[in-house]
Length: 198
Image 1 (spheres, helix red, strand yellow):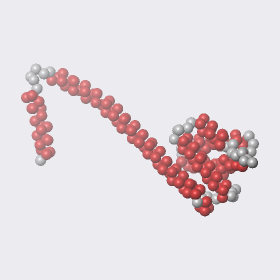
Image 2 (tube, one colour):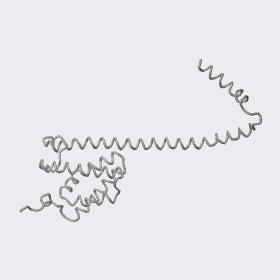
Image 3 (cartoon, one colour):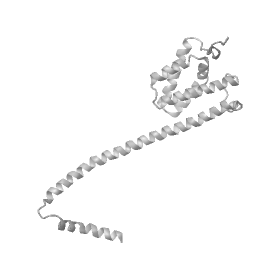
Image 4 (spheres, helix red, strand yellow):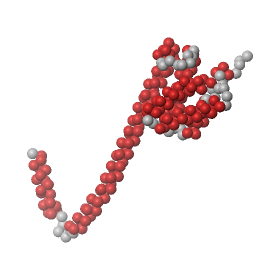
């Protein structure tokens, strides 16, 4: 019934307009104005479509960031739980150098630090210079170097498997800073970090 009503309305609209419109109107001119407005609607529609596309791309990017942060948060919680409950250290992958439980906890915490810097770099909060500045200082420590000796290959394999150039670039920067630090001599051992209280 509604469809029939719409068809009648469509057929009667020109007749109604003829009755309402003044007789001296220049219908050719009105048609030209209408066509001009119609021509303007095409670029406006294209701009609106570009706006929608940009919005969808931004939302996809934000979703990717949120997903990565959720993944990092989950990993961070597991590591923090392990630090609070050392009996679970054996649940993680074995380390070739067989460190003590305390040293293993230190290495896990260093991994948390590196993961945080990695996130800052991947999310473009840091540029190459900022990453280098922090990594150069970081690798002055002996434990920091030991962590990278043991985990650099895992970081690289993971970055390359992700196919993310920025993740791989962070590993490159860490490798460069590590090599520079190694060339300067031994790292600062943990016992030398603090002044002797005596």
